[in-house]
Amino acid sequence: MKLKRILILLLTSTFLYACSQTPTSQAPEAKKYIASLKAMKYDELKNQLRKDTALLNKLIKTATFTLQLTSHFSSGEKSGVDKSVPEFEINHDEATIKVLFDDYCKKLLFEQNFNDGYADSTFSLYGQDMFSYESRFSLTDDNHILEKKDSLFKPFKDDVVTHEKAYFFRGKKIAKTDIRLKRIDSIQAEISLKFPTDFERFSIDKSAKTEDYKDATIEVESLKENMAQLKIPMDLYAEVIGYQAYNNQNLRMNSSALSATPMLGIDKKVSESLKELLDIFAEVLNENEEKNGKEKLDKIRQNQVDAKENMTEFDAYLNKLFEDKEKIKELGDMGLYNEIANAGKKVIGVQTQFVIVEFPDDIKSIDVFVATKSVSLQNKAMVKYGNHYLNPKYFDEAKPNIVFYSKENGRKFGVSNRDGETIVEPKFDELRQVANEYFVGDEKLYWLNVAGKKMVPLPQFVSYVQTLKPGYDVFEKTVGNEDKSGVMLNREKTILPFKYYRFEKHGQFIIASKTHNLDELYDFNFKKIPNKGIQKIHLVDEFIASDIKYPTLFEAEDVNKKKALVDKNLNLLTPFKYEFINPFYGVNNYFM
Image (cartoon, rainbow, N blue to C red; front, side, top):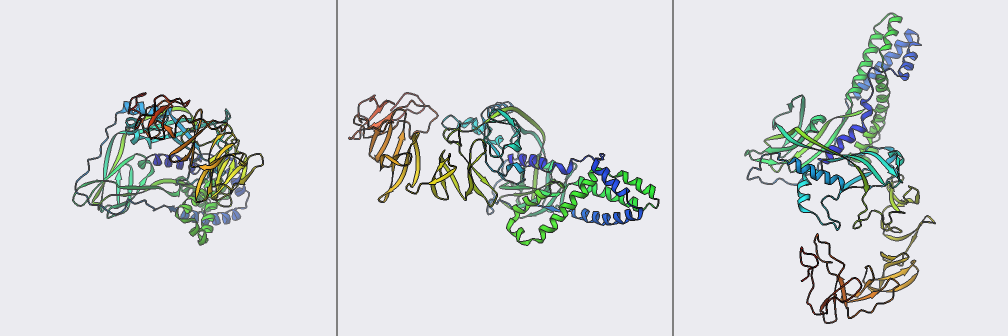
């Protein structure tokens, strides 16, 4: 449902130009056009209008152009249906939904996607937006799900729409077109949720070609076996909330898969403007008196002039495109759709949605459910970027190095900084960031020399693991037949040799696992700490999935496999005498 809402908003804004011209206006461009026609001799004018009439007739024919995508993500083969599913119903607790929606908005965060082509506002169906949103309303600090919140609001999350109102970069407003590769700080947004509280249905029989519902006509493109293809007017489609069908045994079925894409066509206001201009030309051509004929030209309006010019441009584009068979093949269905949508922004409108709905068994009839009453909720929020510590988007929030991609010369990846300045030109086919200054590009490890604006290859290492403190990094390298970890200072000096399989840093010490049964302990000056009999050590809640926040305590093991409890300063809180020590589920500070 969220995709539906976003598509409707996106298409409305993308193709707004085609239907934004006021039919009563006569802008300077229209007046100039009229003056140029009036300046002609009457015979010359009529000859010109005959040529323009032929052009308009051609453009009106082109205006019947439509394009639809027929791709569909099928659920697979048909399955047997042996009983009816429950009848479609709505039973929403409005008060509970509002409380959850308010909580959702308070915990909303955004992520920014970096693409140097966003500024050109190119339309791309199902393309990645500059910003994506996620709320942590049902998550604890350590990413555990609060089941009740999650299950109650889950049916509504996809219907939440975030309307971006203003953007802020380094504390100041910035226009969206000026963002480009800049890492912005926050977005002023209006967050809305619309959900139905009442509905009605209409039915489509298997033999129907069309079905009328109120003022709308639904065209049945196809209804074969377990799949239906419907053309639904956009205004009606926005209110459709579900589909059910009956099979030949009159058993009720829920839909098993659904695909919907807007059908591209010339906006009806553009077509109407072309016909209006054609009628004016006809009046002039039928008038013998020059004075009266030229006075009729004053009926011409700006929207008619725009329609003629924009459709002429689009018609020429289509002719050229469809002559290039290789390009069409290269673009594919989705690429061709996006290509035409962008080229035709000035004239294309979307009045119809092409819907493919699939059911588990053959269809006898379909019920379409339409919302008749709805509740709309709305909140305002200043949304921050979401750099949660368990899944960081930026490894250094103050001075982030950021992977971006460019569509110039193919899809290539480079690195920019917070201010949107390019550090490394886009040249990698693949680029994955593993730390603020470490990257894996085209399967090779690199260190980013920020000052020198270049990637330095590190072929001596298999991978970067982590930074223990500034300048001191853990890498893996191949030793014999195994990959071992060690600590390097500035990638050049070995601090701890490559004989460990894991490093963990904690508040006061570092655990260096030499084998699966032996850990060594170091301080942050990389001096070995006396182990107090400890052979193995790990956080006491390392293997516990719980919403409880446990104190920083460790389970230690001695040479005899006996366990003890250890605090964050490596003080033994118990002797080594236990077979195991685990947190007591659901109760803080209790162990068993």
